[in-house]
Length: 232
Image 1: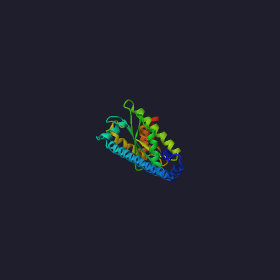
Image 2: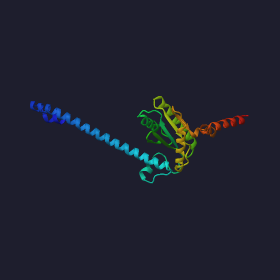
Image 3: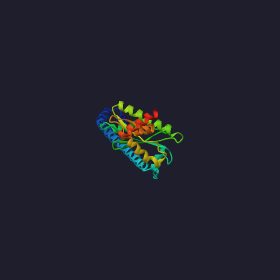
Image 4: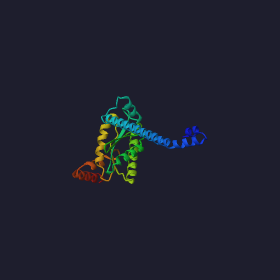
């Protein structure tokens, strides 16, 4: 538009020509902005889709108990602090509300929760959200407690915002090879969460509490008798 005004000059004919060009210039600007915005959104969606696919592929390898050999996936694993012998914790989460946006909202909250070493790997698989958090070898038990606290705080905030979440946490995996076992434990713990949501974290349960949680009524009565006799 500035170029049009510059070329129009000060003559009446120039001013009239500039006015006649005003509508085509504005129409061109609208079309150009629309196409540029659409191209940008499509490119961003492409990047997001690629990133989601990479995280899912990485998780498939991890839950098979192996590190990927494909360089981009291996680099992605390292960016999350995951290595062959690095301890890690696995959590399985699922929204207990049927709202269609609940999985996305919960995934964003879990990503923001992070982990002791930085980012935690969060992958959405249908309605399930799988979290893999690397722990520091120096004190994995303390880091596991930190991850459980982060998950409990995230669950609390989501419940307040109307997106209750059920979360199960497995015990610490000593390395990549133990991640499948930790995931199975997390899935089992998730099944123990009530219908209103909450967190069942195996690293925070005593063996007695775990047995009481999974045993049938007879075993529970025996445990109660055992506890009473021990107290006596």
